[in-house]
Amino acid sequence: MRLATLTLGCKVNSYDTEAMQEIFLNNNYELVDFDSPSDVYLINTCTVTNLGDKKSRQMIRRAKKNNPGSIVIVTGCYAQVSPGEISKIEGVNLIIGAKDRNRIFELVNEYINNNKDNKPLIHVSDILHEKTFERLKVTGLKNRTRAYLKIQEGCDNFCSYCIIPFARGPVRSRGLLDILSEVKALAGNGFKEIVLTGIHVGSYGKDLVNENLLGVIKHVHEIDGIERIRLSSLEPGIITENFVNNIKNLSKVCAHAHLSLQSGCDKTLNAMNRKYDTEGYKKALYLLRSNIENVAVTTDIIAGFPGETEEDFWGSYNFCESMGFSKIHVFPFSPKKGTKAYAMEGQVAPGVKNLRAGLFSSLDKKLQLNFLTKNL
Image (cartoon, rainbow, N blue to C red):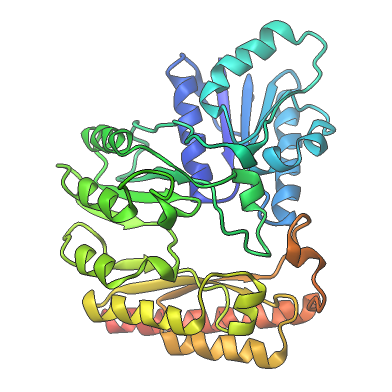
């Protein structure tokens, strides 16, 4: 049997896809390119933006076109939030939400053996009440030296623009022994670099006793064979004196932090329901730069959030310029149905959003060049 996979969205999705892929490979499936004829197509979807939904639908139709007799599995965030919508797409066979993906091989066989009328089987539960971290693992070497390691699932923040808490559920942390077991397996398979990732990785341990992100980093640091440790997106609240004083003495931790900002305007941050202000962000950045030599700090920015005036935009722009980031990931605001921001007053016109995003992109290029020049 042949398997083809396609991942849309974030690095956590990439990890989930590789883990599901590994389950199939361990059951004698052959991995083929997505555009090749395959017996099973696995599409791991994204629903962060409406564009993500559209792209997911396109890929589903493309898979069935590649082999009309194939089984098409749709999983991921779009599958969790909109299973009814996906079930209406011709050619979908199996819809799996954000739970039981570790049973994917079993569910496919169940579909093959019991579903003779070809109706889509929907396997989606209420993720908002889920309390357990779903155990998925990746151990195989995929012709690279960097491995993403998922240590945490879900988010409790409910930012006004974000659908992810509804797609991924509340914070669930992976057990430390399970994390370390996978790191050792990855090191044994030749991986040199580990990226600790999750939906809201800074909240790791919130649901556990006496565990936190710093503890995970320290334990991973002790594992032979691992030479570099990186962290996925963090928020300013986790950058405390204790946190920085500890990681600065861990030689394997790379001098890089992706510190999420979203806006450099306090009014906009409040409307976004972010849990910090620009002053708190500035303090976090100072702690990093005063303790870690030549640290690279990257961030995310949303341009044109509802209610953002010209003055708010330039305040955000000037704040970003003063922070001297090494890279800014820029996104024009995309209204997502199901979020508070979708129905907010003061929606910014698309042309204005794009203009502001373009100005941020130009700033990004300038700041990147500044950072690179410092490193010549």
